[in-house]
Length: 116
Length: 112
View 1 (tube, chains in turn brown, purple):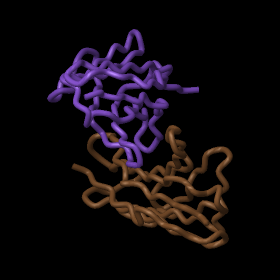
View 2 (spheres, rainbow over the protein chains, first blue to last red; view 1 turned 135 degrees about the vertical axis):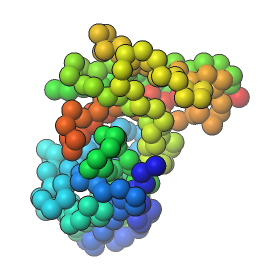
View 3 (cartoon, rainbow over the protein chains, first blue to last red; view 1 turned 120 degrees about the horizontal axis):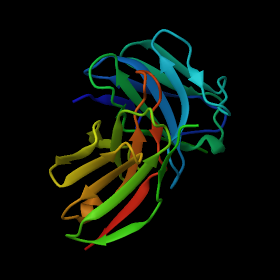
View 4 (cartoon, rainbow over the protein chains, first blue to last red; view 1 turned 180 degrees about the vertical axis):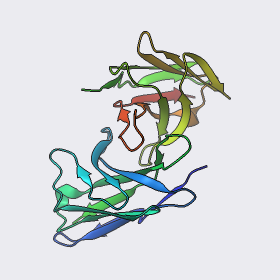
């Protein structure tokens, strides 16, 4: 089945630094990647939708200059948390949709970010 | 606004019993529905998809869809402690590339 590889699985950084999270679709071409954030015991919150080769569409309340999303190819999308602060500590999950076949979301394993 | 609703639980069932998880959705135009299982600290994993009215069975899991009532359910037979997780119901996107609408999830606890 479809696999999305997400790295790193966990990262600890100092406040003010930037962190990049990568998601790769290993066996399918993902025309669309969705990025979610999830706080403990809460539901998934969609942050942005990225389509290959175009600018990401951010949900209301998500700062596009803080959460930089790049989807330069059909197999790679990245999320960069810039100038991270402790309140950005969360579980970040990507998911991809293939360009053909079943319209199903395949999730990456998630990245747990802790900002000190 | 498109919404998917679920009882947040927790739903507790004894080991070996049938767990019944329910979900309603607001958009009558939704055509595809999914159940994802999410263990604590992990990302969601797809366990069932259903597109037509009626039942769909896969091992111990049975998904049921009733489009007239805008209702989706998931039955887990012979529940095991390893089934303890949060179950997310999702209504699929009408157009490829649109986000799926997720419910808040139901936390299931299977007691040994």
